[in-house]
Image (cartoon, rainbow, N blue to C red; front, side):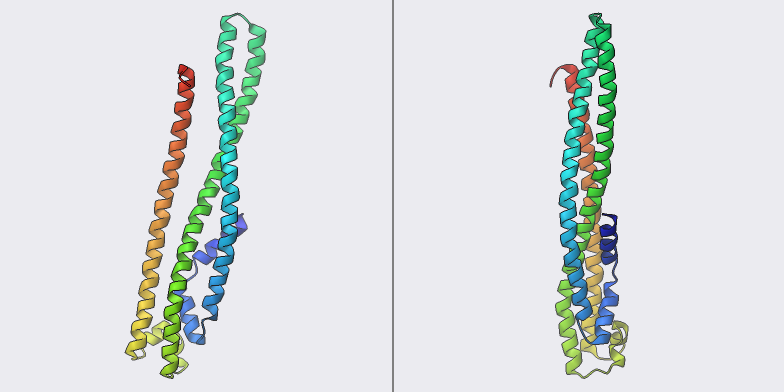
Length: 225
């Protein structure tokens, strides 16, 4: 899982400006197409991993709730046994309560750990999808830019980078190159805002789960469950 996230983070961190520069320098979209293929392949792996971890999160949460409920029931029963003078039964029940509580805590720790991993996968998926959308949109603009450059028979020197193009004096090419840069910057900002919203949503979800668990335990103690 760590290896997949590392590859995905590398793709997310890819400098699209550098890819554009290289494509212009080589007068070919091959480097852009290769990046798109890598992103699509890793997105598929990322979706499979997220589905797997998401399933594990649900299972662990269910296990935790199950053992937490058993522990709460045992706790109540021990009080009743002591009130009725059933010391031996209370001792046995206390031992079972201790082991049940440990299991509940173990499942809770596993659930929280996998929930954190799941959040990372969802965030990475969101960012990678945004990156893919951006680069696909700009590929069409790049193709038009390369066609324009070929039609004007630009020299290899003026094709070295977008910076060279911007200073080449060719106003048509300069405008298109600047348009590509501006949209890449805007798409990156939008991706970062989406990721921030996802972080807030996941925090709210985790807090909601905690509150619901606490209220469920309180209802059981009050005999409202």
